[in-house]
Image (cartoon, rainbow, N blue to C red; front, side, top):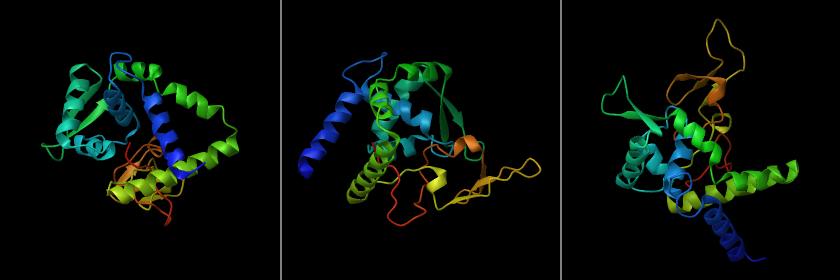
Length: 197
């Protein structure tokens, strides 16, 4: 199979997996926003980080966010340190709706792959996403455990977190380690993060 056919298959798979029209009352673009805010860490749940991840303008991102807030799927919280910035958190209503995410069909298909194939396929897709993101001048997103800023020894002492983000000098909870981060920097050269989607 040639490279163009592979690219077209990936693009077609993405279109089918994102759903057509309204699913659960949300458009495919709103689903992208809801998924992002459900997977992003606390440092990345901002309108500008979502715009960077989604590969869109801040104005377009703001319209998507405005609709999700109005429908009760996202809650806005003003920053304590900078009153101009806000953090957006998924509500219970959002988490309940995510159980009916149209992406679940693709998740089930990936689950059906043998574990070795799934791991290799994930590595290949991350490499493709990283390459395309770099060519397009888009930021890479990734998770803590593969980030150059990740510091930790898996040993909690005196109630202090065993993990820290060296970029923002903040402690990290174990549950935050697999969340998406806009401050991601690959720990290993040639190891891409997650490109924009």
